[in-house]
Length: 296
Ligand code: SF4
Image (tube, rainbow, N blue to C red; front, side, top):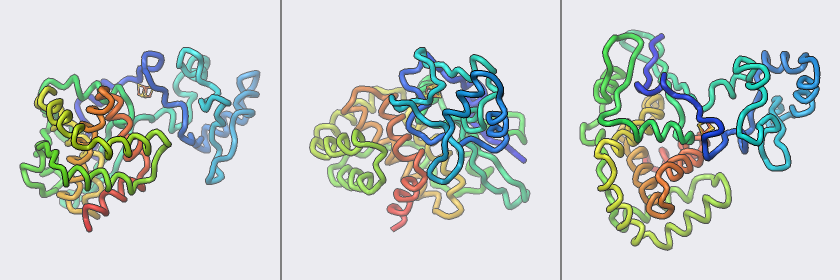
């Protein structure tokens, strides 16, 4: 099975206590069967705590119970995981071991083989930093060849037809377009109240924000916005069997325009990107709401 991933993927590390954010909150972290057996039988005080702090989630699967502050009980004040500190990373359940990595499955009908598209999610601030650190075009590695792949070669490797201009970010801040973009995002399921409030604020100040976002986009490194658009599209390439690749490209381009608008509002590019990703990429239904809206 061939695996394709961005070149920075093997260098990814979680910033843990150096991160402004923690991932050990909000999500329901399901515990896989193998790990659950281990936790059920864990001896000593840590075992007792594990048994106390595991509950059943919405779908009846075992998951971690959050404390009164809304965090995982095993997260220390310093933002580190006690399970790793006391037992090592192998002691974690599969989701905690993988996060924020994603694996999507595509298929090469010529070679009749499955292709895994791997990366780390943009809800993670380290991933956004890695994209910002790219000095030029983001390249990918494929386990079935020795050299790096640029994005256009990656698309042809997957037999995905996409116009060349759709692979380069082109900003558009025209009034009608921005209004329709914000309306489309209004249809998605909000992750929290903060998202809904910020969206209303953006709608109220759309013109001003568009001007500011346009100016900000010109100050960013020329490759960053195209790399960001391509990286967002990369995560949805497995959807290009069900959706036209141009539809997926439109979704990615609009995401970058929205991130720029949010950057204009907050002044924080990393947070604007991670928030967009939390809202859209981490709720698969929201991805489909947007892709469907472009297909209509
Ligand atoms: S956002 Fe990324 S760097 Fe920060 S805690 Fe989560 S995985 Fe680690």
